[in-house]
Image (cartoon, rainbow, N blue to C red; front, side):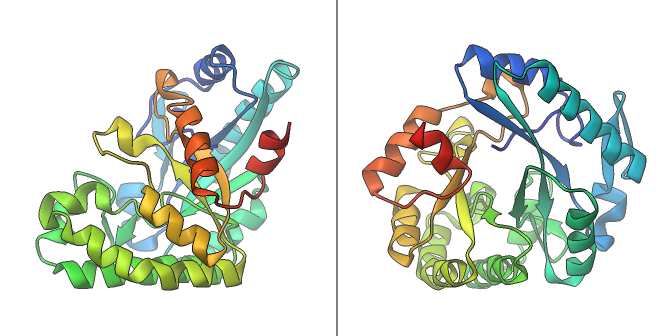
Length: 273
């Protein structure tokens, strides 16, 4: 429930190839969550979608083209796998209305909310992250990121928050393990807010594909979420290639059971089958 086909600006994977990969892996469902980044301060960088193999400015026709392609796959592979159409939206408070309007205009089967940027720099992208971290102390970075997570939950636009501790991906290169300590000191209050606002999280397995020893979130952070009453609503491989669809799904399911965290929708329905 976190897969990026070629429509995302950082993917070249054919959506149908991803469906076939999911079927081969024995998955019950696959949800496409193409990137939607609406930050008006980053229009020249992020406001694009790939259509017919070419990057184009994100327009109504581009979004509808994506929706139509996934709808076609949903129909053609019905009976073999459930194909869901969704989005992964970046969020910061200064464009709340823009994000809210997008979600209302383009109904989806599933929508992930995510924090990708701080101070208009993509802290989850290797090309930009160091530009932020090298001029920001670790305490400020952790506080700012956790504050953005709280704002995301308060918006109530999204029921599921993606890669909740995803900033560690590149922050560790600058701060070392201190970023984990600073984040872990602040995440309990983040999760208390998530629980109050009804926001769940995903387990994103891509961290291990990129050389990290654990998922997003780590086991320790997942235990914090459990203690706050937050549920895991989805598992995502964050695949940008067909061969990565379903990456370490079984391990993520095992972690959920081992930690004893609650499970929400849509994951609960599939685990109950």
